[in-house]
Length: 274
Figure (cartoon, rainbow, N blue to C red):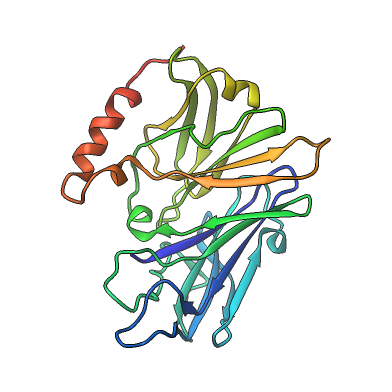
């Protein structure tokens, strides 16, 4: 599974930073216990009206890492960049209508995705998760999204939950979408947020909203990966947690994944809200 690696702009003074390594840490070649090193460049792309603009291109050091920060590019809340690993010296267009396909660091036949750390820093604390965005998702121009609130938090120490929906497509489209956040039992709509393709839709969800019942999120026109960030109260020592959910297709085997996903999604996507 080859992947893109988004870098996102967030509110509340949160800085996101991507750490990409030339080494393949989670796979091994036959007969070797040492990680494979790759000669790669990392190109940074931004969505623009004329296409994907290549802002920077970095030659990765041998057996080394490269860190890209949202603050390096002054990303505002909801803005998005994409890091794309490329062969060393491969030609790129200054403005490309489609993101180039990323190079793969796979060295065996494992279906495990190539890993890249996407971390978030706030008030001196850092939390991270594996921030890949699969190419097979980015190749779909439209889709649907259904996610649950199991990773949102409530409690005396919680100040705010952020739902960050990362949406990425290879084509530099700017379609309009809508993300609805609602209480499952009462069908009460909490938030209805418009956003565009190739962006990060950010929703602030209070602990009181989480305490009101299980929360669902849906979009009938857009795919995406939801990231959940929980921040402590401002008057308490800083703490932060970062999690993400998997789509309903991951609940099923490869043969049944699309049919099973539709069975789960259909009742919720068509449900009228109050």
